[in-house]
Amino acid sequence: MTDFFKGIAPLRYEGPDTTNEFAFRHYDPDEVVMGRTLRDHLRFSVTWWHSFAWEGGDPFGGRTFERPWFGDTMDHARLKADAAFELFTILGVPFYAWHDLDLRPEGATFSESRDRLTEITDYLGQKQEETGVRLLWGTANMFSHRRWMAGSATNPDPEVFLYAAATVKACLDDTKKLGGQNYVLWGGREGYETLLNTDLKRERQQAGRFLCMVVDYAKKIGFDGTILIEPKPQEPTKHQYDFDVATVYGFLKDFGLEGEVKMNIEQGHAILAGHSFEHELAMAASLGLLGSIDMNRNDYQSGWDTDQFPNNVPEVMLAYYEILKAGGFTTGGTNFDAKLRRQSLDPEDLVLAHAGAMDVCAAGLKAAARMLEDGELERRRAERYADWEREGAILESDLETLAARVVREGIDPRPRSGRQERLENLVNRYL
Ligand code: XLS
Ligand code: NI
Ligand code: NI
Image (cartoon, rainbow, N blue to C red):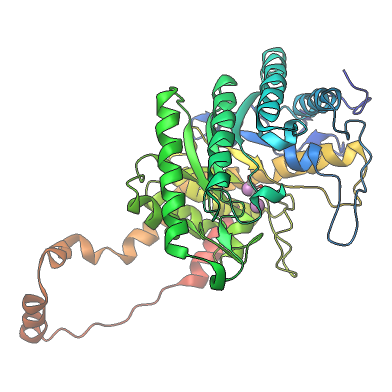
């Protein structure tokens, strides 16, 4: 037990009219929507890196937070774990997520780093037993240390590729040990700053071979979670190879991995790529690649990837609509890859940032479920394509036959309204 969150009791659902800040208004974990509890629909997860490892720095200034677990010993690492599981319990979240580097200080050698990871994940295993909280996903931080500055698997230096292989093996081993539901690969510095020093073809080939090795090893050890790629178009590099869902799909197809790997889609990354979150989700669902989500938004004015907690119900509703339409999460979940603002210093801020985000997601999901169950939007969408029901043979034909038909029947298409504003009005009815 730490005394970091002392005096803060586990949050309960009190309904929309409560004035208690430390209660849920929309998230009743036991409420059943479309045949599933909200707990099982949303599958909330707290991230180790933003909530416990990040110190509040920005490009202009360093640490603003004071946390008793900041320090580079294994005792600090255990204290951090104690506080983390206390937060999970206060919030009642079923899952959490980590990078190796968030959990423990790096050692002087690879072997020492690996052994420390094993030691701390053994400790997490005990905490999981005690609390019932489970691991949504593990991942490797292959972007912070200077060895990764030119990439991990895509590095021009083969020794970095070796180090990356050893690192992912260790992280996969420990993710499996903890019963992790997924393993995520976000392409940290897999990209370039300038094409002038970059052999793009070679680097892409290295990344493909690396992912094949990861998939093979996961099978070999009997990891039964899902391997996920998290697309992002830029930041930290100027151009990231895993640009967006469609780009990653092309990459997976190239290496025969489209049946092996799914996608972890982050709202802020979608926006950086010039898409909406729902676009990326719909695209992934249409390709059968929807895995999990990172639920954190950018700043709407600056455009930076500011990793803010979601606070916009209409936006979140459209995201969950795509997820529900695709059948909901299986191994995936709603991971808050979100951090406090650096002035939000108090333990209460950490609790209430998550609680508010959980309420926003619950309200959004319930609105999405109402819209899906009502079915009017889908009826109208289907109506727009209704003529294809009797004209399906067109797609089996050829240009000459089709051209002849246009002439023979004097075909002259009459444009019809897309009714966008009417559909926007309809969506607002379910909020
Ligand atoms: C960074 C990514 C990162 C991944 C995990 O922008 O979102 O946090 O989710 O490596
Ligand atoms: Ni991100
Ligand atoms: Ni992320």
